[in-house]
Image (cartoon, rainbow, N blue to C red; front, top):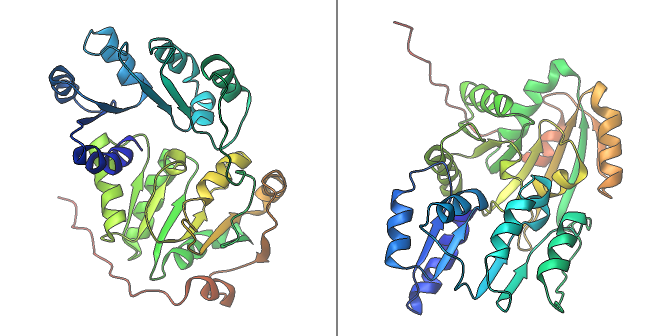
Length: 311
């Protein structure tokens, strides 16, 4: 997310002579330290690496005039709140502060009350407001049919984003799909930062049509023209469902969201939909059913590349 924000900000900053820099972990800090030493006007940072560079004496927030906290609700969910508060405490109290959040909950309220003075609130649709252009479908599937149903859903011609619950499952499904002739890449926390950016770039450019991700891609990640989001594994809670689903039907475009539920998942998924205020179209399906073809169209040609024999 930091990389995507910087890609948007950099050309605007350059037009008025400002220098930008991303600060995040998982990569060498040396280029970041060198950039800070030369002087930077705009930093797009994740809390952990920024705090680390401050402790090492490479950065100081005493001259910051504008502070933006994005995904504030998720910061609180992930336990970043103490770190974010320490960082905000190091910025001048008279500076401008902007807080972006999909939902207002207790964690966000702490930040708002402590750091915002007479704030002006700008509100768009609630995270609980379904997007009119987004179709929601709940497919009940037997466990034995799940693999073929997933392949049918993701085997169309458009760009597709699938979500798995764990890093292991995301990696496994990417391999399964690729082996079946549907070229897919994965995105999860076990990948290096360079691998994450490489896989996301391949998906964004269209070199790869299918991305299988954990909730690392549920927020903020923006890729144009994602036609379908498939919850291979239903998320654990309704906010994650809304954020995952929000990767399609963006900027007025249409999109389709399909959640798969095996018999043992049906009760939990029904509760999830109720909390998300979503009333999906429900259907029992098997691979090859016309209902799937109606959603994604006929499958694209598949190219299966045989793996070389083990040496």
